[in-house]
Length: 497
Ligand SMILES: C[S@@+](CC[C@H](N)C(=O)[O-])C[C@H]1O[C@@H](n2cnc3c(N)ncnc32)[C@H](O)[C@@H]1O
Image (cartoon, rainbow, N blue to C red; front, side, top):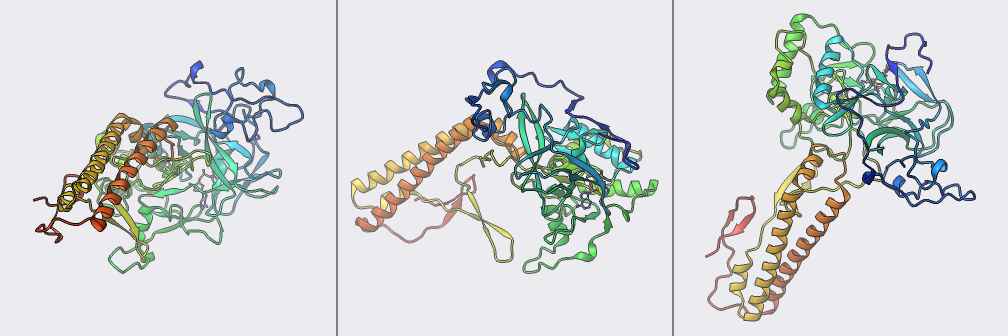
């Protein structure tokens, strides 16, 4: 790449991720996924096209193992099969990247390369960049524990800007045992069009950066759709959803950011950040945004969560870790940082990967319902006391049937709980980084056990309804509703006699 473009910021162009704190994983032979493609000179798609098992699971074929040999078309990251692109200077958003050829929907455009660093290092660097006055965020999250930092070393992908109506998207691929992030076209893109993807910034404090993507559906600010931003800019009292715009400090990303920090300002900002860490900041949110990722920086656009967030540091994690490591940010040193651009952009999962929601208990104990005012309310499900119901029934067979189904349901619940404990590490990893998919084998086990429990519950409840409706009730037994008590899991249960 020609880096002699006037005004281009100093960075090193790389075509592969660099590993600073650990070595590149060495793929074990038994872990190599081998597809079943057979090259047919008359069929263009035969050598690892759309139907290739590896392509379907977003895994690149391994040279020397792929049956298509030299004809394999599924090594695009490895062979840097990028689309032609060109740098240009935008108005107000710094540099951007243009398509320099017509690009097809779904086409791999370029890899988001950079230095693969640990989550802690990403946090440290984002603070450093902030203090150095860098306001563009280039750190994206790779998974729960690692980030890609394209600030000092990266590919042209680092210049792709955010849009609320993007023509590209990020996808994660497994390449020789490592996860890599690619930018893919979401639609046909004509030559000369600016490339952009949705950073899915998660805002969690500081100034709000005006989004200059120009889309008619633009949400106004980077991270505006994130929960932290919404909670900060809306009044949440009941029935009052007025937008409190007057609270928002504004700056356009290029020109009017209040950038120069005096020592005092730094200290003030740090105090503010400390408050944020102590959960005094109303913008802190949970990490419940679905299967997407980010870029980061205050200059980590997730940046510390700005990872694909441009940095994938979950708010809760930021908070805890900062508490664990106060020496990282001593109050009176240059390490102090504001969270001016404290946002994380999230990389979307590949459309080919399924994400499974797994947690203790196959049916959520709390259900949420969307209210007309756009908020969500949780409801606790009531549980039926089957033994009590059985005692109400006159016929012994009816009683036995209800008790039998209750026992089956209890067994299915116990099985599921057991399975949950077995796969807890995988689930916890998944919950830390919801953009990653749980391994298919784990998900399949979970789905099977969940279905068994759902079926057992269905059988029990139909049996109860059927028997209560169709068989006589014992005389002298009260059918009045009885008081409810909460068990340890917050389920409401009928008080048994
Ligand atoms: C990964 S960099 C993109 C390249 C950057 N424009 C440059 O000149 O290097 C991300 C940064 O670009 C700016 N940016 C990207 N998209 C933007 C948008 N839609 N509106 C305003 N600023 C944007 C923000 O400063 C953001 O932190």
